[in-house]
Image (cartoon, rainbow, N blue to C red; front, top):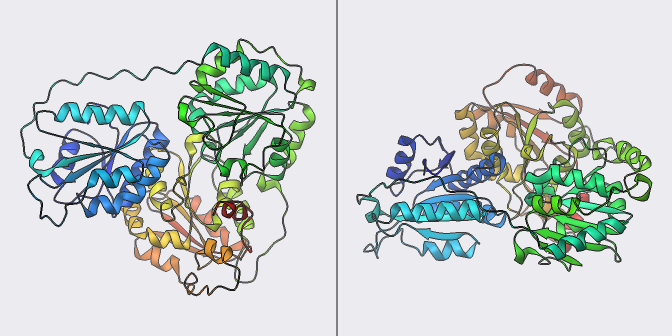
Length: 534
């Protein structure tokens, strides 16, 4: 694995993966011991997304793999290039309590099952799994039975594998897209995760064609600093972004799957808007909504090819006018939009909290967002300097992944302040790995938007349902965090955040947990959008 280029590994060791994990470490692969397998796989997922390298998680067979399966599902749905190295029962151990159909389990959540078939084929099997993870951007679970682990493998030379060849778009589709950009008066580009590596090519084409820029949530920060950046498209979009995207006559989705989240269930894009989708994964074209034109090609290759065919547009003939730039500067960020203050003597408005965090936290940060009713606030209000600074593990919509996401992203971003935003439910669900952050000495700022409930369910079920199963006593999360060895503070008012300023002024080698008691928002603005799909 080390010879193939695995940059980092995370895991929880059991009898089925101890020898393999130690072999990784002996080969020089950095390894982090997590406290839960779901945390380990999510750390690896976040590290891979942030660093752009294939990363590895190591788990025990049977229950080690089942514990990890939520993290694996998230990574698989996000097309993260990740390898999960899993022990497996020996072929003859039919009565082992650990025996399950690991391949079927893995396949069920969208990951790719692979296995080492023999000691003689071990190098070929591992190389095949690595190639699938890197070249196809897939999450691969590589099962290694115990009896095969005990065999003697011949370590043949592993030459560096060449990178995949980018998919070149067809000439006819390229010309069609160029013609559409030449005649459009209000074009908008929406970049997804597949476009992040090619954002300069997209910026150049946007300048030439007069397009405004936006991103899906996972690509937040791709166009940070651009005067014509609308920010996130979809449920987190500002009113101005929604207005300008909705009025577009041409929307081009670059490496973006146009999910219901990005399009507000299709309502964000106007009825008469021409929609083009560019993706190097052909089955993705039109998979989530009909498109007027699907271009099968690498985003960078396509953008550069189209740029050769599009004339430089006059500014007044497109969306890229000075008046639009001034509107974006004034109203294009949630942190600049005035709102009513829902704060009470005991709780702080989550919008006020998020606005204050944006101003107080250093700009050079890496953000990790858990799932829940609160999530729109940090995702929309807190800026990211570039897409590598925003790690959004939301494809499976599982709460409880935020803390591990922050740890993985932090290790891939040395020098940046790592910030985790979580609800109290997700934080408590994953709290075992707070010890991991403490042990690693990470100066991780964990902001808990604490409404002492599973807030999404509270706001979703409003028809007289008994909510006692999703509401809880207001516990002292700061005290619990101190018990793990972290610094902690409780925030109920704006003034309480002065403690954060004091903490930031000193170098720290431990996490800070902020137990922020938030006011009820009656159901966040983005939640209403999300539940249209349920």
